Image (tube, rainbow, N blue to C red; front, side):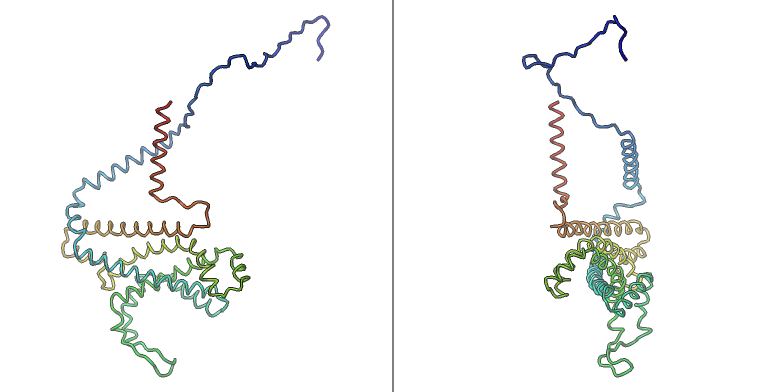
Length: 329
């Protein structure tokens, strides 16, 4: 829009840029303040208060009888039951994993018979409660007093006395292994299917035998996916060993139950003893899981996950650096 004739036009000139000789204002260091998050602080305070109340009630309540807890914690009866729990868990974990590998390979086989039998086995043992399997095996001698190997509907080559073979620990291991194999099979099958198809094709292109492909190429990569799933089942297996008490095997839980029947006033301390021992066992398994996963993560990630000790060192280093920055401001 044009100005009328004779109107005065004011022009404001921009200040000249500072020359090299013009002194500039000194830059002052400014501290960046973190964003205030009141909700996080409130939630933290509530959790700390509830945790403190829980710990105070746990320590101060005389009903827990912590003196009796200390008495029973390392008693020979409890330790003997703990050894049986470890023994049954170790045997069942190994046999269950081996059975799971066989079942998984059968599920992935091109044979319709193997696929059908494997599917029926997995479906059956995942459907039946574990306590039913254990009780059925415990009374198995009522159905079959002798076991034989030979020609079907023909002569038997070998005959076994079932009552001699079916000891309490054998019944517990067989029952837990049969149940564990059904769940392990799905974990192994999922891990094998997670391996990239290109790895199978590359191994086949090199002319490697099928068995060598599986042992050296496919299965080591599948273990990265199998490990966390199977360790979760292993933790469940540690807790499931408490059911072997019902087949007359005095494991950790069975020993505590027996002592509780003899000393009724110590039932709560004995249950606390069992709880703490199971917490210790599952913690050890979780630590082993971390290092196994870290081992199989080599080559799959740019950097290995830090260990708890490395995390602690990093946290201490960051804390010292922060204190120095605070002191310097």
